[in-house]
Length: 297
View 1 (tube, rainbow, N blue to C red):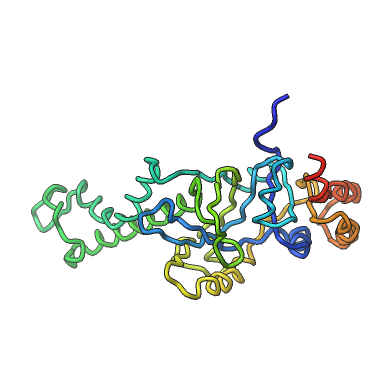
View 2: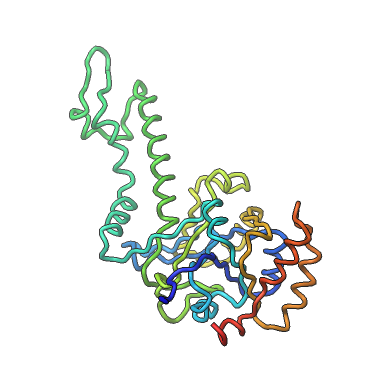
């Protein structure tokens, strides 16, 4: 029988038992994760992306993963993930045509200003000026009579920026620098092995917690207080959570076996909405220790 290369479970790892308990009772909170695009973008941008990340790997391959992301995890069904719009990330590298396109789009966003001018004639007085005639018009010199047209272009640019930012949220380097606990790990990480899925909130959801006009992206380049900035913003994004039910859970991972009894007791205190006692009892049987996984799988 061949070894499975992916799991039927999406795992979200965390470094502490307290975090795990909070996820069980309140849902998984969204936070800005610092992602280095040095391996992809010409400018080497460091960007904070609001997300919850999951990995699609079999339990037998979690040893390396927990060394970076923590020895506690909740494992949820893929059906739950798909229903909640979790999406596999797109892995790419410096020499990929996809990366070239990302660089071109990110560095030339303002070139979209002339799109409407090139292809739609504008009436000025009794003369219709063709799109070709307007090719070299300067955007900031549009006349007052063309104000509505200028506004239309502005709206188009804003819409394009929003859509492009959404693409960036689901792109990851095949290999690169990994930011953990306020600093980068000393060695590069081959992210492709993590088989990451992401949940990313919509811009509307971010606006609902007071984050506007950033398209969900937080640019941290050359910011000496970037960690503090991210921490402050995460207070707001923490209000956004992914909720799951006991029957959505396939595994609960704790670091040590002697932590299992206390977690079972904690589960009894959680007020799961409209959940039968039988489902809660079954949930308790899904707890497994990291030690068991490493030794037996």
